[in-house]
Image (cartoon, rainbow, N blue to C red; front, side, top):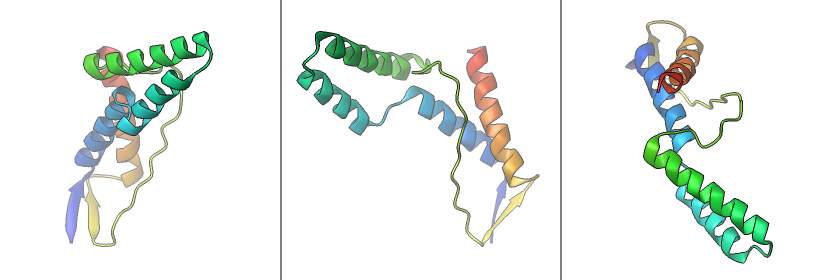
Length: 107
């Protein structure tokens, strides 16, 4: 049986949240670039270009792409052969989201 500490879970969730804020998947970036090229409207092309530019700035400078409020939704698969130590699993996930928010707000 594998044992995982709630501290590791919390830090992993924090890191994943940070990554989600700063990095668009390459398939999304490619789709946005294709949409910009094929967009008929000058305003639409300009907006798509700004989205692409914002995603690049977010990745390079670790600034969240979107300042919109939201709610973290975490999907987790855990094997029967895993034991969580150090507290409740749900609390560790919530701690990770909270750490990300606090880390980002301090940056």
